[in-house]
Image (tube, rainbow, N blue to C red; front, side, top):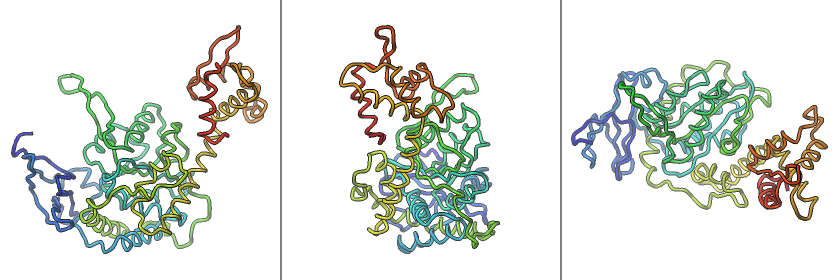
Length: 425
């Protein structure tokens, strides 16, 4: 980078200095908030850093900023204490969204996490799941409006602008109707969500310049995500990273407004301003807390929840959240075990258990599977289908022996390990 080059900037951490973009809608102006001394700040139009770059704010005329597609604070405001800030976030959510008390607490701390997410090496995502008319979009709007640089998108969007905006603005992706209808878009979305849980895992895509030359580009997609959808992702690894609230499971609270008042935007802006001050004051003191890890929980669950739980200071509150997150994960595991591949795994484990040694014929696995699941599937599933599930979903390789396909004895230990991992035994 050439010295004195002016770089439009949204956010930068430079040594002990924090730099954040703000937008004043009334004045239609942007500025960079610069904090060098633990919360003390000033607004500047140019910031020179040690690399020789001169950072400048994105223009207020930028369509994403002007239209509110990306929400920014307008200026830091004193946040008080962490406990006061979390209580005010919860009160805001409670006024406008009907969430379970447990998820309301999780959502409030997730908002806080979003403002310091870059202090952690692993992130989980929040999801609202339910049919239309159950409050999913309302929940996204309320929670998302408080998050760090939220970018609002929907299933009607193509994934190309999502890649570009996340790479440019970072922040929090707020994704409504995430059940993308087209397989290509769904695959791209899953890449964004899978790679976005850890820093340093960009998504590579090939772009074409004006000379029709192809050039690979690494899109940064790390950051918090809020998702609303009707169903589930087919990718089990992605599903395991979601903390899910099922919407529409009880009557709507009578005090929830049917139409969101105009005051919501002002309230949300004031909270974003306080959350910006929280980031300026607390960023360098926030670190993963190993005491927040859940005992006896699998590593993936602790990776998903540790950043969130690290921000909870009250031991009783942390314990309540740990219990609730573990219960939600147990529901996911129960749902997971009902999936076809898990049913095949259970039948495979039973087939191996019935033999003291040697390979297991695919026909034996099919017989055990059909004895338990034929009624649910409406027919007996073929040996070929069982073999496909073993190969493509469980990564177990059948071989032909004596004219029939079998799972070799060498796969017994892998089957045993997978069955324990997924709670089948």
